[in-house]
Image 1 (cartoon, rainbow, N blue to C red):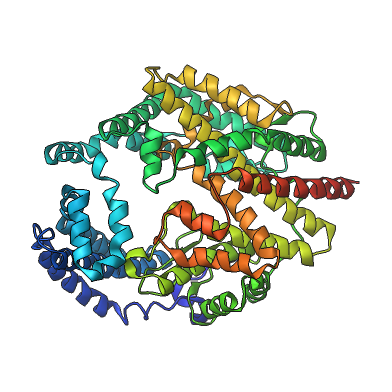
Image 2 (cartoon, rainbow, N blue to C red):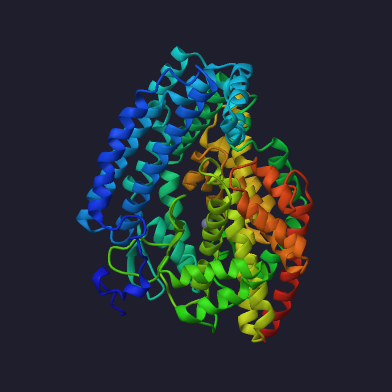
Length: 602
Ligand SMILES: [Zn+2]
Protein backbone atom coordinates (compact mmCIF):
# COMPACT_ATOMS: atom_id res chain seq x y z
CA UNK A 1 0.00 0.00 0.00
CA UNK A 2 1.19 3.48 -0.92
CA UNK A 3 1.52 5.72 2.13
CA UNK A 4 -0.37 9.01 1.90
CA UNK A 5 2.00 11.78 3.10
CA UNK A 6 1.32 14.35 5.79
CA UNK A 7 0.77 17.88 4.51
CA UNK A 8 4.20 18.91 5.81
CA UNK A 9 5.87 16.11 3.78
CA UNK A 10 4.57 17.30 0.41
CA UNK A 11 7.28 19.00 -1.73
CA UNK A 12 6.62 22.76 -1.86
CA UNK A 13 6.64 22.85 -5.67
CA UNK A 14 3.61 20.53 -5.69
CA UNK A 15 1.58 22.81 -3.38
CA UNK A 16 -0.27 26.01 -4.21
CA UNK A 17 1.17 29.34 -3.17
CA UNK A 18 -1.48 31.25 -1.21
CA UNK A 19 0.85 34.02 -0.05
CA UNK A 20 -0.27 36.10 -3.03
CA UNK A 21 -3.72 36.28 -1.35
CA UNK A 22 -2.45 37.01 2.20
CA UNK A 23 1.24 37.07 3.05
CA UNK A 24 0.44 35.19 6.27
CA UNK A 25 -2.38 34.33 8.67
CA UNK A 26 -1.80 37.55 10.62
CA UNK A 27 -2.65 39.58 7.51
CA UNK A 28 -5.82 37.50 7.14
CA UNK A 29 -6.83 38.14 10.74
CA UNK A 30 -6.20 41.87 10.42
CA UNK A 31 -8.53 41.90 7.41
CA UNK A 32 -11.33 40.32 9.46
CA UNK A 33 -11.31 43.42 11.66
CA UNK A 34 -11.25 45.74 8.64
CA UNK A 35 -14.23 43.98 7.07
CA UNK A 36 -16.21 44.11 10.32
CA UNK A 37 -15.73 47.89 10.42
CA UNK A 38 -16.53 48.19 6.73
CA UNK A 39 -19.76 46.19 7.32
CA UNK A 40 -20.90 48.72 9.91
CA UNK A 41 -20.19 51.58 7.52
CA UNK A 42 -22.13 49.89 4.72
CA UNK A 43 -25.06 49.07 7.02
CA UNK A 44 -25.31 52.80 7.75
CA UNK A 45 -25.88 53.56 4.04
CA UNK A 46 -29.39 52.14 4.26
CA UNK A 47 -32.04 54.50 2.89
CA UNK A 48 -29.64 56.71 0.85
CA UNK A 49 -29.36 55.22 -2.63
CA UNK A 50 -32.43 56.85 -4.20
CA UNK A 51 -31.44 60.44 -3.47
CA UNK A 52 -29.35 61.02 -6.60
CA UNK A 53 -27.34 59.24 -9.27
CA UNK A 54 -24.18 60.01 -7.32
CA UNK A 55 -25.70 58.43 -4.21
CA UNK A 56 -26.75 55.33 -6.12
CA UNK A 57 -23.17 55.02 -7.39
CA UNK A 58 -21.66 55.58 -3.94
CA UNK A 59 -23.91 53.03 -2.25
CA UNK A 60 -23.68 50.39 -5.03
CA UNK A 61 -19.89 50.48 -5.17
CA UNK A 62 -19.64 50.37 -1.36
CA UNK A 63 -21.81 47.22 -1.25
CA UNK A 64 -19.89 45.57 -4.09
CA UNK A 65 -16.55 46.47 -2.56
CA UNK A 66 -17.52 44.97 0.78
CA UNK A 67 -18.48 41.72 -0.93
CA UNK A 68 -15.22 41.77 -2.84
CA UNK A 69 -13.13 42.04 0.34
CA UNK A 70 -15.19 39.30 1.92
CA UNK A 71 -14.68 36.93 -1.04
CA UNK A 72 -10.93 37.32 -0.84
CA UNK A 73 -10.94 36.44 2.81
CA UNK A 74 -13.36 33.57 2.31
CA UNK A 75 -11.34 32.07 -0.55
CA UNK A 76 -8.12 32.14 1.48
CA UNK A 77 -9.77 30.42 4.46
CA UNK A 78 -11.46 27.73 2.40
CA UNK A 79 -8.39 26.91 0.28
CA UNK A 80 -6.29 26.65 3.44
CA UNK A 81 -8.93 24.47 5.07
CA UNK A 82 -9.22 22.18 2.03
CA UNK A 83 -5.48 21.48 1.87
CA UNK A 84 -5.75 19.77 5.27
CA UNK A 85 -9.23 19.61 6.77
CA UNK A 86 -7.84 18.11 9.99
CA UNK A 87 -5.82 21.29 10.73
CA UNK A 88 -7.52 23.04 13.68
CA UNK A 89 -6.05 26.47 12.85
CA UNK A 90 -7.69 26.51 9.43
CA UNK A 91 -10.91 24.98 10.68
CA UNK A 92 -11.05 28.01 12.95
CA UNK A 93 -10.19 30.55 10.20
CA UNK A 94 -12.77 28.93 7.94
CA UNK A 95 -15.36 29.19 10.72
CA UNK A 96 -14.52 32.88 11.22
CA UNK A 97 -14.92 33.50 7.48
CA UNK A 98 -18.36 31.84 7.54
CA UNK A 99 -19.44 34.02 10.46
CA UNK A 100 -18.27 37.08 8.59
CA UNK A 101 -20.31 35.97 5.59
CA UNK A 102 -23.46 36.12 7.72
CA UNK A 103 -22.43 39.52 9.12
CA UNK A 104 -21.95 40.98 5.64
CA UNK A 105 -25.21 39.44 4.36
CA UNK A 106 -27.11 41.08 7.22
CA UNK A 107 -25.34 44.44 6.69
CA UNK A 108 -26.31 44.56 3.01
CA UNK A 109 -29.71 42.79 3.03
CA UNK A 110 -31.57 46.07 2.38
CA UNK A 111 -29.71 46.85 -0.85
CA UNK A 112 -31.66 44.82 -3.43
CA UNK A 113 -35.11 45.55 -1.92
CA UNK A 114 -34.29 49.29 -1.96
CA UNK A 115 -33.31 49.15 -5.64
CA UNK A 116 -36.44 47.13 -6.48
CA UNK A 117 -38.64 49.53 -4.55
CA UNK A 118 -37.79 52.13 -7.22
CA UNK A 119 -39.89 52.04 -10.37
CA UNK A 120 -37.99 51.11 -13.51
CA UNK A 121 -38.28 54.73 -14.70
CA UNK A 122 -37.02 56.19 -11.45
CA UNK A 123 -34.07 53.79 -11.41
CA UNK A 124 -33.18 54.55 -15.03
CA UNK A 125 -33.27 58.32 -14.33
CA UNK A 126 -30.75 57.85 -11.52
CA UNK A 127 -28.50 55.74 -13.77
CA UNK A 128 -28.67 58.28 -16.59
CA UNK A 129 -27.84 61.12 -14.21
CA UNK A 130 -24.50 59.60 -13.22
CA UNK A 131 -22.08 58.69 -16.06
CA UNK A 132 -20.11 56.31 -13.85
CA UNK A 133 -23.24 54.14 -13.51
CA UNK A 134 -23.22 53.24 -17.21
CA UNK A 135 -20.83 50.39 -16.37
CA UNK A 136 -23.51 48.97 -14.04
CA UNK A 137 -26.46 49.14 -16.47
CA UNK A 138 -26.60 45.39 -17.15
CA UNK A 139 -26.36 44.63 -13.42
CA UNK A 140 -29.42 46.82 -12.74
CA UNK A 141 -31.26 45.38 -15.76
CA UNK A 142 -30.83 41.86 -14.42
CA UNK A 143 -31.83 42.90 -10.91
CA UNK A 144 -34.80 44.89 -12.27
CA UNK A 145 -36.34 41.75 -13.75
CA UNK A 146 -37.12 40.59 -10.23
CA UNK A 147 -39.30 43.65 -9.64
CA UNK A 148 -42.54 42.06 -10.80
CA UNK A 149 -41.75 38.95 -8.75
CA UNK A 150 -40.96 40.79 -5.54
CA UNK A 151 -43.76 41.11 -3.01
CA UNK A 152 -44.60 43.73 -0.42
CA UNK A 153 -42.17 44.25 2.45
CA UNK A 154 -44.53 42.46 4.86
CA UNK A 155 -44.99 39.51 2.50
CA UNK A 156 -41.26 39.23 1.83
CA UNK A 157 -40.63 39.22 5.57
CA UNK A 158 -43.15 36.44 6.02
CA UNK A 159 -41.56 34.33 3.26
CA UNK A 160 -38.05 34.96 4.59
CA UNK A 161 -39.18 33.89 8.05
CA UNK A 162 -40.61 30.67 6.65
CA UNK A 163 -37.55 29.79 4.53
CA UNK A 164 -36.27 27.25 7.07
CA UNK A 165 -39.65 25.55 7.05
CA UNK A 166 -39.59 25.45 3.23
CA UNK A 167 -36.20 23.70 3.43
CA UNK A 168 -37.50 21.01 5.76
CA UNK A 169 -38.21 18.35 3.14
CA UNK A 170 -34.80 18.53 1.47
CA UNK A 171 -33.10 18.53 4.89
CA UNK A 172 -35.12 15.51 5.95
CA UNK A 173 -34.19 13.80 2.69
CA UNK A 174 -30.46 14.44 3.33
CA UNK A 175 -30.54 13.32 6.93
CA UNK A 176 -32.45 10.19 6.07
CA UNK A 177 -30.26 9.18 3.14
CA UNK A 178 -26.87 10.34 4.47
CA UNK A 179 -27.17 9.53 8.15
CA UNK A 180 -30.00 7.18 9.01
CA UNK A 181 -30.18 4.61 6.24
CA UNK A 182 -28.19 1.47 7.04
CA UNK A 183 -27.35 -0.78 4.12
CA UNK A 184 -26.70 -4.54 4.35
CA UNK A 185 -23.40 -6.39 4.25
CA UNK A 186 -22.46 -7.56 0.75
CA UNK A 187 -19.44 -9.22 -0.85
CA UNK A 188 -16.88 -7.23 -2.80
CA UNK A 189 -14.77 -8.40 -5.76
CA UNK A 190 -12.41 -10.37 -3.48
CA UNK A 191 -15.28 -12.03 -1.62
CA UNK A 192 -14.79 -9.92 1.52
CA UNK A 193 -17.82 -8.89 3.58
CA UNK A 194 -18.30 -5.13 3.28
CA UNK A 195 -20.98 -2.78 4.58
CA UNK A 196 -22.74 -1.24 1.58
CA UNK A 197 -22.99 2.56 1.25
CA UNK A 198 -23.87 4.89 -1.63
CA UNK A 199 -20.14 5.50 -2.17
CA UNK A 200 -19.24 1.82 -2.20
CA UNK A 201 -22.23 1.06 -4.43
CA UNK A 202 -20.61 3.16 -7.18
CA UNK A 203 -17.42 1.10 -6.86
CA UNK A 204 -19.16 -2.29 -6.77
CA UNK A 205 -21.21 -1.44 -9.87
CA UNK A 206 -17.91 -1.17 -11.75
CA UNK A 207 -16.92 -4.68 -10.70
CA UNK A 208 -16.19 -7.07 -13.54
CA UNK A 209 -17.94 -9.89 -11.61
CA UNK A 210 -21.65 -9.88 -12.54
CA UNK A 211 -22.71 -11.40 -9.22
CA UNK A 212 -21.06 -8.58 -7.24
CA UNK A 213 -22.99 -5.96 -9.24
CA UNK A 214 -26.30 -7.76 -8.96
CA UNK A 215 -25.94 -8.29 -5.23
CA UNK A 216 -25.02 -4.65 -4.59
CA UNK A 217 -27.97 -3.44 -6.69
CA UNK A 218 -30.51 -5.64 -4.95
CA UNK A 219 -29.15 -4.89 -1.48
CA UNK A 220 -29.15 -1.14 -2.07
CA UNK A 221 -32.69 -1.00 -3.39
CA UNK A 222 -34.03 -3.31 -0.67
CA UNK A 223 -33.31 -0.46 1.76
CA UNK A 224 -34.67 2.38 -0.39
CA UNK A 225 -37.82 0.37 -1.03
CA UNK A 226 -38.49 0.07 2.69
CA UNK A 227 -38.67 3.86 2.87
CA UNK A 228 -40.25 4.66 -0.49
CA UNK A 229 -43.34 6.27 1.07
CA UNK A 230 -41.19 8.50 3.24
CA UNK A 231 -39.11 9.51 0.21
CA UNK A 232 -42.31 10.16 -1.74
CA UNK A 233 -43.46 12.43 1.05
CA UNK A 234 -40.21 14.45 1.16
CA UNK A 235 -40.08 14.76 -2.64
CA UNK A 236 -43.77 15.68 -2.93
CA UNK A 237 -43.33 18.40 -0.29
CA UNK A 238 -40.26 19.74 -2.05
CA UNK A 239 -42.17 19.94 -5.33
CA UNK A 240 -45.07 21.67 -3.57
CA UNK A 241 -42.65 24.23 -2.16
CA UNK A 242 -41.30 24.98 -5.66
CA UNK A 243 -44.83 25.27 -7.07
CA UNK A 244 -46.07 27.40 -4.19
CA UNK A 245 -43.12 29.81 -4.30
CA UNK A 246 -43.45 30.22 -8.07
CA UNK A 247 -47.16 30.91 -7.76
CA UNK A 248 -46.93 33.56 -5.03
CA UNK A 249 -44.15 35.28 -6.95
CA UNK A 250 -46.31 35.44 -10.07
CA UNK A 251 -44.43 33.00 -12.27
CA UNK A 252 -46.32 30.78 -14.70
CA UNK A 253 -44.68 27.61 -13.35
CA UNK A 254 -41.95 26.34 -11.04
CA UNK A 255 -39.81 25.76 -14.11
CA UNK A 256 -40.19 29.34 -15.29
CA UNK A 257 -39.28 30.59 -11.79
CA UNK A 258 -36.19 28.40 -11.55
CA UNK A 259 -34.92 29.20 -15.05
CA UNK A 260 -35.52 32.94 -14.70
CA UNK A 261 -32.50 33.06 -12.37
CA UNK A 262 -30.19 32.90 -15.40
CA UNK A 263 -32.78 34.25 -17.81
CA UNK A 264 -32.97 30.96 -19.71
CA UNK A 265 -36.17 30.66 -21.77
CA UNK A 266 -38.32 27.52 -21.61
CA UNK A 267 -37.47 26.70 -25.24
CA UNK A 268 -33.94 25.63 -24.16
CA UNK A 269 -35.41 22.97 -21.89
CA UNK A 270 -38.07 21.82 -24.35
CA UNK A 271 -35.60 21.66 -27.24
CA UNK A 272 -33.28 19.51 -25.15
CA UNK A 273 -35.97 17.01 -24.15
CA UNK A 274 -37.43 16.81 -27.65
CA UNK A 275 -34.07 16.38 -29.41
CA UNK A 276 -32.78 13.78 -26.94
CA UNK A 277 -36.02 11.83 -27.41
CA UNK A 278 -35.38 11.87 -31.14
CA UNK A 279 -31.98 10.20 -30.63
CA UNK A 280 -32.74 7.43 -28.16
CA UNK A 281 -31.95 4.86 -30.86
CA UNK A 282 -28.25 5.77 -30.48
CA UNK A 283 -28.41 4.98 -26.77
CA UNK A 284 -30.19 1.69 -27.54
CA UNK A 285 -27.38 0.81 -29.96
CA UNK A 286 -24.78 1.55 -27.30
CA UNK A 287 -26.66 -0.55 -24.73
CA UNK A 288 -26.91 -3.49 -27.13
CA UNK A 289 -23.21 -3.25 -27.89
CA UNK A 290 -22.48 -3.37 -24.17
CA UNK A 291 -24.50 -6.56 -23.86
CA UNK A 292 -22.66 -8.11 -26.82
CA UNK A 293 -19.14 -7.18 -25.70
CA UNK A 294 -19.72 -8.19 -22.08
CA UNK A 295 -21.12 -11.48 -23.40
CA UNK A 296 -24.09 -11.40 -21.05
CA UNK A 297 -27.29 -13.35 -21.80
CA UNK A 298 -29.27 -10.43 -20.29
CA UNK A 299 -28.20 -6.85 -19.65
CA UNK A 300 -29.51 -5.36 -16.41
CA UNK A 301 -29.47 -1.78 -15.19
CA UNK A 302 -26.60 -2.78 -12.87
CA UNK A 303 -24.47 -3.81 -15.86
CA UNK A 304 -24.25 -0.29 -17.28
CA UNK A 305 -21.19 0.88 -15.32
CA UNK A 306 -18.70 -1.96 -15.52
CA UNK A 307 -15.82 -1.10 -17.87
CA UNK A 308 -16.15 -2.81 -21.25
CA UNK A 309 -12.62 -2.09 -22.37
CA UNK A 310 -10.62 -2.94 -19.26
CA UNK A 311 -8.08 -0.53 -17.81
CA UNK A 312 -6.12 1.59 -20.29
CA UNK A 313 -2.49 0.65 -20.77
CA UNK A 314 -1.71 4.34 -20.58
CA UNK A 315 -0.43 6.27 -17.59
CA UNK A 316 1.14 9.68 -17.13
CA UNK A 317 3.31 11.21 -14.46
CA UNK A 318 2.21 14.73 -13.53
CA UNK A 319 5.09 16.18 -15.58
CA UNK A 320 4.09 14.16 -18.66
CA UNK A 321 0.45 15.13 -18.16
CA UNK A 322 1.38 18.82 -18.13
CA UNK A 323 3.05 18.41 -21.54
CA UNK A 324 0.08 16.47 -22.94
CA UNK A 325 -2.36 19.09 -21.64
CA UNK A 326 -0.37 21.88 -23.31
CA UNK A 327 -0.39 20.00 -26.62
CA UNK A 328 -4.09 19.14 -26.43
CA UNK A 329 -5.04 22.77 -25.69
CA UNK A 330 -2.68 24.29 -28.27
CA UNK A 331 -5.62 24.71 -30.70
CA UNK A 332 -6.89 27.47 -28.39
CA UNK A 333 -3.95 29.62 -29.41
CA UNK A 334 -0.63 30.82 -27.99
CA UNK A 335 -2.10 33.18 -25.40
CA UNK A 336 -4.23 30.43 -23.87
CA UNK A 337 -1.26 28.06 -23.78
CA UNK A 338 0.97 30.71 -22.18
CA UNK A 339 -1.61 31.22 -19.42
CA UNK A 340 -1.84 27.48 -18.78
CA UNK A 341 1.97 27.36 -18.58
CA UNK A 342 1.83 30.19 -16.01
CA UNK A 343 -0.53 28.13 -13.84
CA UNK A 344 2.04 25.31 -13.93
CA UNK A 345 5.01 27.58 -13.24
CA UNK A 346 3.53 29.82 -10.53
CA UNK A 347 2.36 27.15 -8.11
CA UNK A 348 -1.33 27.72 -8.81
CA UNK A 349 -2.04 23.98 -8.49
CA UNK A 350 -2.12 21.85 -5.36
CA UNK A 351 -1.19 18.60 -7.00
CA UNK A 352 -0.87 15.53 -4.81
CA UNK A 353 -2.92 13.82 -2.16
CA UNK A 354 -2.01 14.30 1.50
CA UNK A 355 -3.68 13.22 4.72
CA UNK A 356 -6.75 15.32 5.48
CA UNK A 357 -6.86 16.94 2.03
CA UNK A 358 -10.27 17.43 0.51
CA UNK A 359 -11.04 14.71 -2.04
CA UNK A 360 -11.84 15.24 -5.73
CA UNK A 361 -10.80 18.28 -7.72
CA UNK A 362 -11.95 21.84 -8.28
CA UNK A 363 -10.96 25.25 -9.64
CA UNK A 364 -11.20 28.12 -7.16
CA UNK A 365 -10.11 31.65 -6.41
CA UNK A 366 -11.86 35.01 -6.84
CA UNK A 367 -11.66 38.25 -8.80
CA UNK A 368 -8.51 39.59 -7.09
CA UNK A 369 -6.60 36.32 -6.88
CA UNK A 370 -5.18 34.07 -9.54
CA UNK A 371 -7.20 30.94 -10.30
CA UNK A 372 -6.23 27.93 -8.17
CA UNK A 373 -6.72 24.23 -8.82
CA UNK A 374 -7.00 21.48 -6.24
CA UNK A 375 -6.13 17.99 -7.50
CA UNK A 376 -5.57 14.58 -5.96
CA UNK A 377 -3.20 13.44 -8.67
CA UNK A 378 -2.94 9.77 -9.72
CA UNK A 379 -0.72 8.71 -12.63
CA UNK A 380 -3.70 7.95 -14.87
CA UNK A 381 -5.52 9.06 -17.99
CA UNK A 382 -8.49 9.90 -15.74
CA UNK A 383 -6.33 12.42 -13.85
CA UNK A 384 -5.21 13.99 -17.13
CA UNK A 385 -8.88 14.50 -18.03
CA UNK A 386 -9.46 16.08 -14.62
CA UNK A 387 -6.48 18.39 -15.11
CA UNK A 388 -7.72 19.78 -18.45
CA UNK A 389 -11.30 20.01 -17.06
CA UNK A 390 -10.25 22.16 -14.10
CA UNK A 391 -7.89 24.12 -16.34
CA UNK A 392 -10.95 25.00 -18.46
CA UNK A 393 -12.64 26.54 -15.41
CA UNK A 394 -9.46 28.34 -14.38
CA UNK A 395 -8.86 29.85 -17.83
CA UNK A 396 -12.52 30.92 -17.97
CA UNK A 397 -11.94 32.69 -14.65
CA UNK A 398 -8.65 34.17 -15.82
CA UNK A 399 -10.05 35.61 -19.06
CA UNK A 400 -13.22 36.87 -17.38
CA UNK A 401 -11.36 38.57 -14.55
CA UNK A 402 -8.79 40.22 -16.80
CA UNK A 403 -11.42 41.51 -19.24
CA UNK A 404 -14.38 42.46 -17.05
CA UNK A 405 -14.87 44.85 -14.14
CA UNK A 406 -15.64 43.26 -10.76
CA UNK A 407 -19.41 43.52 -11.18
CA UNK A 408 -19.25 41.19 -14.21
CA UNK A 409 -16.25 39.18 -13.01
CA UNK A 410 -18.06 35.88 -12.40
CA UNK A 411 -20.21 33.59 -14.56
CA UNK A 412 -23.37 31.55 -14.10
CA UNK A 413 -23.48 27.78 -13.68
CA UNK A 414 -25.30 27.53 -17.01
CA UNK A 415 -22.13 28.55 -18.89
CA UNK A 416 -19.48 27.35 -16.40
CA UNK A 417 -19.35 23.65 -17.24
CA UNK A 418 -19.12 24.43 -20.95
CA UNK A 419 -15.56 25.77 -20.59
CA UNK A 420 -14.35 22.71 -18.69
CA UNK A 421 -16.12 20.14 -20.87
CA UNK A 422 -14.88 21.78 -24.07
CA UNK A 423 -11.34 21.15 -22.84
CA UNK A 424 -12.18 17.49 -22.19
CA UNK A 425 -13.46 17.28 -25.75
CA UNK A 426 -10.24 18.82 -27.08
CA UNK A 427 -8.24 16.25 -25.11
CA UNK A 428 -10.38 13.41 -26.49
CA UNK A 429 -9.71 14.65 -30.01
CA UNK A 430 -5.98 15.05 -29.34
CA UNK A 431 -5.71 11.52 -27.93
CA UNK A 432 -7.60 10.06 -30.87
CA UNK A 433 -5.21 11.84 -33.22
CA UNK A 434 -2.05 10.69 -31.41
CA UNK A 435 -2.83 7.25 -29.98
CA UNK A 436 -2.71 4.28 -32.32
CA UNK A 437 -2.93 1.33 -29.89
CA UNK A 438 -6.47 -0.08 -30.39
CA UNK A 439 -6.84 -0.80 -26.66
CA UNK A 440 -6.07 2.83 -25.82
CA UNK A 441 -8.29 4.20 -28.59
CA UNK A 442 -11.16 2.00 -27.39
CA UNK A 443 -10.72 3.30 -23.86
CA UNK A 444 -10.69 6.95 -24.99
CA UNK A 445 -13.75 6.48 -27.19
CA UNK A 446 -15.63 4.71 -24.42
CA UNK A 447 -14.69 7.46 -21.96
CA UNK A 448 -16.51 9.89 -24.24
CA UNK A 449 -19.49 7.59 -24.84
CA UNK A 450 -19.96 6.86 -21.13
CA UNK A 451 -19.69 10.57 -20.35
CA UNK A 452 -22.31 11.32 -22.99
CA UNK A 453 -24.62 8.58 -21.68
CA UNK A 454 -24.33 9.78 -18.08
CA UNK A 455 -24.60 13.47 -18.89
CA UNK A 456 -26.74 14.03 -21.96
CA UNK A 457 -29.08 11.03 -21.76
CA UNK A 458 -29.33 10.41 -18.03
CA UNK A 459 -29.64 14.08 -16.97
CA UNK A 460 -32.30 14.70 -19.62
CA UNK A 461 -34.20 11.68 -18.32
CA UNK A 462 -34.01 13.27 -14.86
CA UNK A 463 -35.11 16.62 -16.28
CA UNK A 464 -38.13 15.01 -17.91
CA UNK A 465 -39.15 13.28 -14.69
CA UNK A 466 -38.64 16.45 -12.67
CA UNK A 467 -40.81 18.50 -14.98
CA UNK A 468 -43.52 15.84 -15.09
CA UNK A 469 -43.94 15.61 -11.32
CA UNK A 470 -44.00 19.42 -10.94
CA UNK A 471 -46.69 19.72 -13.60
CA UNK A 472 -48.74 16.87 -12.17
CA UNK A 473 -48.56 18.29 -8.66
CA UNK A 474 -49.57 21.74 -9.94
CA UNK A 475 -52.60 20.11 -11.59
CA UNK A 476 -53.68 18.59 -8.29
CA UNK A 477 -52.25 15.07 -8.60
CA UNK A 478 -50.87 13.71 -5.34
CA UNK A 479 -47.32 12.45 -5.75
CA UNK A 480 -47.50 9.05 -4.13
CA UNK A 481 -44.68 6.54 -4.36
CA UNK A 482 -46.67 4.33 -6.73
CA UNK A 483 -47.57 7.24 -8.99
CA UNK A 484 -43.94 8.37 -9.31
CA UNK A 485 -42.55 4.86 -9.70
CA UNK A 486 -45.00 3.99 -12.44
CA UNK A 487 -43.91 6.98 -14.51
CA UNK A 488 -40.22 6.59 -13.68
CA UNK A 489 -40.15 2.90 -14.62
CA UNK A 490 -41.74 3.57 -18.00
CA UNK A 491 -39.48 6.55 -18.66
CA UNK A 492 -36.40 4.49 -17.82
CA UNK A 493 -37.46 1.71 -20.21
CA UNK A 494 -38.17 4.30 -22.90
CA UNK A 495 -34.66 5.75 -22.53
CA UNK A 496 -32.66 2.50 -22.40
CA UNK A 497 -34.88 0.44 -24.71
CA UNK A 498 -35.60 -3.26 -24.88
CA UNK A 499 -31.92 -4.21 -24.71
CA UNK A 500 -32.05 -3.73 -20.93
CA UNK A 501 -34.04 -5.97 -18.59
CA UNK A 502 -36.44 -3.78 -16.66
CA UNK A 503 -35.59 -4.72 -13.09
CA UNK A 504 -38.54 -3.64 -10.93
CA UNK A 505 -36.19 -1.89 -8.47
CA UNK A 506 -35.20 0.76 -11.01
CA UNK A 507 -38.72 2.26 -10.94
CA UNK A 508 -37.80 3.47 -7.45
CA UNK A 509 -34.54 5.12 -8.51
CA UNK A 510 -36.10 8.57 -7.90
CA UNK A 511 -35.86 7.81 -4.16
CA UNK A 512 -32.08 8.17 -4.20
CA UNK A 513 -31.42 11.10 -6.56
CA UNK A 514 -30.53 14.22 -4.52
CA UNK A 515 -30.74 16.42 -7.63
CA UNK A 516 -34.54 16.27 -7.59
CA UNK A 517 -34.28 18.63 -4.61
CA UNK A 518 -32.17 21.17 -6.59
CA UNK A 519 -35.10 22.76 -8.42
CA UNK A 520 -34.57 22.38 -12.19
CA UNK A 521 -30.80 22.13 -12.06
CA UNK A 522 -29.94 18.94 -13.97
CA UNK A 523 -30.84 20.05 -17.50
CA UNK A 524 -27.75 22.29 -17.48
CA UNK A 525 -25.45 19.26 -17.31
CA UNK A 526 -26.96 17.97 -20.55
CA UNK A 527 -27.05 21.29 -22.43
CA UNK A 528 -23.50 22.08 -21.28
CA UNK A 529 -22.03 18.75 -22.43
CA UNK A 530 -23.69 18.99 -25.86
CA UNK A 531 -22.65 22.62 -26.33
CA UNK A 532 -19.06 21.71 -25.43
CA UNK A 533 -18.94 18.96 -28.06
CA UNK A 534 -20.13 21.42 -30.70
CA UNK A 535 -17.76 24.20 -29.60
CA UNK A 536 -14.79 21.83 -29.62
CA UNK A 537 -15.57 20.94 -33.24
CA UNK A 538 -15.74 24.61 -34.19
CA UNK A 539 -12.36 25.24 -32.54
CA UNK A 540 -10.83 22.18 -34.21
CA UNK A 541 -12.06 23.30 -37.64
CA UNK A 542 -8.98 25.53 -37.76
CA UNK A 543 -11.07 28.65 -38.44
CA UNK A 544 -9.46 31.37 -36.31
CA UNK A 545 -12.68 33.40 -36.21
CA UNK A 546 -14.47 30.44 -34.58
CA UNK A 547 -11.69 30.01 -32.06
CA UNK A 548 -11.79 33.70 -31.22
CA UNK A 549 -15.57 33.60 -30.80
CA UNK A 550 -14.97 30.88 -28.20
CA UNK A 551 -12.30 32.93 -26.43
CA UNK A 552 -14.73 35.87 -26.35
CA UNK A 553 -17.17 33.68 -24.42
CA UNK A 554 -14.42 33.01 -21.87
CA UNK A 555 -13.86 36.77 -21.58
CA UNK A 556 -17.54 37.75 -21.25
CA UNK A 557 -18.16 36.81 -17.59
CA UNK A 558 -21.63 37.96 -16.58
CA UNK A 559 -21.56 41.11 -18.73
CA UNK A 560 -24.40 39.73 -20.87
CA UNK A 561 -27.14 37.11 -20.48
CA UNK A 562 -25.83 33.51 -20.64
CA UNK A 563 -27.76 32.63 -23.79
CA UNK A 564 -26.43 35.73 -25.58
CA UNK A 565 -22.87 34.90 -24.52
CA UNK A 566 -23.21 31.39 -25.95
CA UNK A 567 -24.81 32.69 -29.12
CA UNK A 568 -21.79 34.91 -29.72
CA UNK A 569 -19.53 31.93 -29.11
CA UNK A 570 -21.32 30.17 -31.97
CA UNK A 571 -23.94 28.02 -30.24
CA UNK A 572 -27.61 28.96 -30.18
CA UNK A 573 -29.03 26.90 -27.34
CA UNK A 574 -32.61 27.82 -28.22
CA UNK A 575 -32.20 25.81 -31.47
CA UNK A 576 -31.67 22.03 -31.82
CA UNK A 577 -28.60 22.28 -34.12
CA UNK A 578 -25.97 22.16 -31.37
CA UNK A 579 -27.60 19.01 -30.00
CA UNK A 580 -27.74 17.45 -33.49
CA UNK A 581 -24.00 18.06 -33.91
CA UNK A 582 -23.32 16.43 -30.54
CA UNK A 583 -25.42 13.36 -31.44
CA UNK A 584 -23.62 13.04 -34.78
CA UNK A 585 -20.31 12.98 -32.85
CA UNK A 586 -21.71 10.36 -30.46
CA UNK A 587 -22.80 8.22 -33.43
CA UNK A 588 -19.40 8.52 -35.18
CA UNK A 589 -17.50 7.58 -32.05
CA UNK A 590 -19.90 4.76 -31.27
CA UNK A 591 -19.32 3.35 -34.78
CA UNK A 592 -15.55 3.37 -34.37
CA UNK A 593 -15.80 2.01 -30.86
CA UNK A 594 -18.07 -0.88 -31.98
CA UNK A 595 -15.55 -1.90 -34.59
CA UNK A 596 -12.59 -1.72 -32.21
CA UNK A 597 -14.34 -3.43 -29.33
CA UNK A 598 -15.42 -6.34 -31.55
CA UNK A 599 -11.90 -6.74 -32.93
CA UNK A 600 -10.36 -6.62 -29.46
CA UNK A 601 -12.76 -9.27 -28.24
CA UNK A 602 -11.57 -11.78 -30.86
ZN1 LIG B 1 -16.46 21.35 -13.59
